Image 1 (cartoon, rainbow, N blue to C red):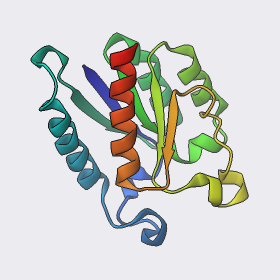
Image 2 (cartoon, rainbow, N blue to C red; image 1 turned 135 degrees about the horizontal axis):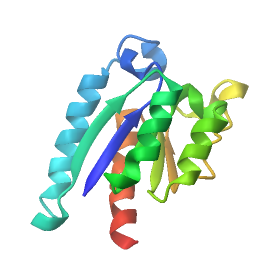
Image 3 (spheres, rainbow, N blue to C red; image 1 turned 180 degrees about the vertical axis):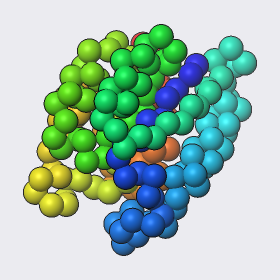
Image 4 (cartoon, helix red, strand yellow; image 1 turned 90 degrees about the horizontal axis):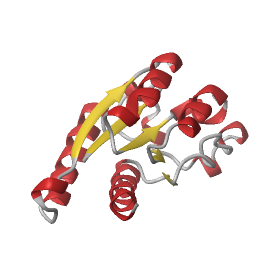
Length: 153
């Protein structure tokens, strides 16, 4: 089972950008930790059901839209941190809504308690779940949820 880990704008600056909000873990560190977590989940899975993670980050809305639109041809699910696009990109929301591939939304910080403009996610009603406010753990919980969701559907 192939899962796309998709990260939006400015997440390439994890570990540098506002560490009081986003911590000191870099995107590379996050990806390594998720890869290890995925391997730990695979220990309990049959060989034919093993999870393979693919990582992608872009600061460009159109590139992210292209990745989402192409996902059904390759991936069983998407773990997606749309970052700032969560709050204003109807185009990305529509891309997620247009595909049959399940998408779980994740956020490092708890967007529900941040600035007013961050409290609404346009993705929330087109994703199967949202995990936020726990840093890397949001990703781990979101990945576990996504895998279980795919297994059940």
